[in-house]
Length: 178
Image: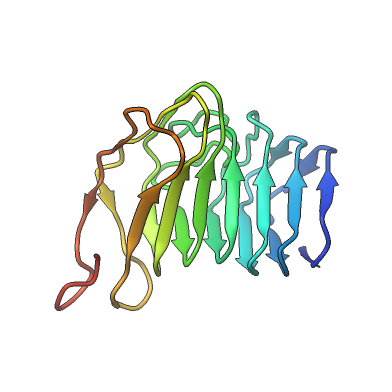
């Protein structure tokens, strides 16, 4: 099922994906918030739009792929594969696909994730937490899709000792990551 909206909304009930993918197109500058638990073996996809998808539940258990295209997705919890987080538990080698998207952390406790980033186009990771630092420990940033120049931006308002331990490699001929 895909939801397309240009208006703000909040869905607070439990969502069981089964093996399906829940897709959002965040049209306009609105914020769509999912505050209930998302479960199942399916995945989550932010397909397009300049708006914000806010995943505020820290106990999401869905294990499918996470694909974020355009706009911003905010999360309050990151975790290692197999553990509950705003982006689900992941499974095996599941990565977080960033395709021209911004992933923004707003949690309070400080988190570590070993889920790899699959950068398909320019991407940004921000830590806007007042108190918690974040650490990305996956071995590599993969580069799916067509080989092209890409920019990874790390930023945010948090001034703590945030770490990004993944190797940024090129995905083809010439320099593709800046």
